[in-house]
Image 1 (cartoon, rainbow, N blue to C red):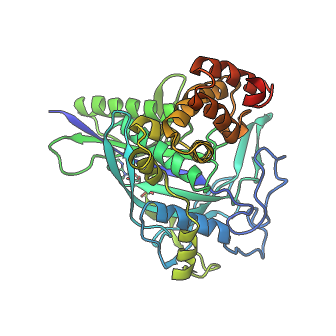
Image 2: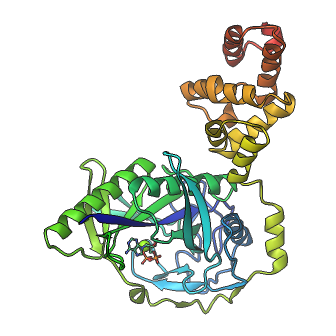
Image 3: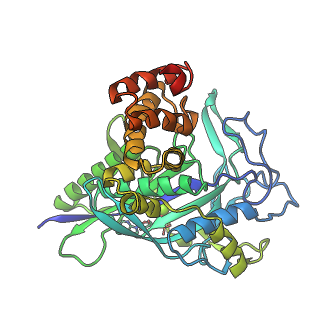
Amino acid sequence: MSWQPVIGLEIHAQLSTRSKLFSGACTAYGAEPNTQAALLDVALPGTLPVPNRAALDKAIAFGLAINATIARQSIFARKNYFYPDLPKGYQISQYEAPIVGNGTLCVRTDDGRTLDVAIERAHLEEDAGKSLHDAFHAATGLDFNRAGVPLLEIVSKPVLHSAQDAVAYMRTVHTLVRWLGVCDGNMQEGSFRCDANVSVRRTSADKLGTRTEIKNVNSFRFVEKAIEYEIERQVRALENGEAIVQETRLYDAAAHRTLPMRGKEDADDYRYFPDPDLPPLVVSDADIAAVRAALPELPDARRRRYIEALDLPESDAAQLCADKATADYFEAALAALPGEAKLCANWILGELAAALNVGNLTIEASRVDAPALARLLARVREGAISGKTAKDVFAAMWAGEGDADAII
Ligand code: ADP
Ligand code: MG
């Protein structure tokens, strides 16, 4: 009898806004500890929360992009727990009535399958501060710069069945939040983090198995490895007649294993209740319409347009739409060289991508901009220079020797 892995992800995306969720300015990452601590987040008596409109709009934008229901009334709740980085003794989150309800995200796997991943909810909550365990001898430092920074917690249903599919889903969410300008997606800085919930069951079983939760894994590769390890561990335990304990585990990348961290709380333990300082959050049809009107063309729509209207191969379209900056660069090149989608795509995904890679640059920082590339490609199209010569010209442009025509 074989086992079916079941995985659900909780993704925390830090919203890129200038203010915290309820008060105070948002930190530039890496600022001196506590220079951006807000009075509310260090629990000064008399402070009161006021929701940040920009964070709300970003949550709505995400909800619309996954075709979710947007709650006309959602509730901020207190999630009570003790931790030194949480002076209030509770985190303001959303529990019973989240801003974003059921939605779906279409995910394309590496091996060419399409998954419609059901998303259960996405809710707004505050980030916590940071404990600095290595900064002082025999003491822990506390930095509240991050406390109160708005997070969107995106919770998938337990519908993923392999580590690879879970990571494909996570990448799709990552692309989407960056595309929408909702989150910068920087995983090293912790702006995009993931908790992976994993269980296994007999393929014949209709009930889900007991899950464990792997906390805060901060790279795609480690998420994949951690889930793979956890699936194997659970199958081994169950085959040995042991029970799985519902718990939170940490992934140790160096040893490639997960370790128990603490027993997993149930929702009851948090004594959630509506925050009496915050009235229900009301969202009007006009609010939603305004956010909808400002949405960019979504990655999936753009990818399909590249295939259907521009006749690009699927893999070109997918690669161009891996991030919005690349897709926008392509649009700008094509605008300057109409009708030459394939030529533009070849160069952006070939020569330009290689040069960016060598220089470790993002496409926004490219040394050759889209109009300049289009001017070079115009000469190729006319037959004025060969493809091979064009590569030399491109290298010279990259080195800062001027425009294509001048170099030619
Ligand atoms: P909590 O905050 O207690 O972890 P949530 O409801 O916020 O609870 O998140 C639960 C996550 O765990 C969801 O992503 C859900 O899909 C996933 N999940 C729930 N049950 C299982 C299970 N048996 N196996 C795998 N994942 C599960
Ligand atoms: Mg969880």
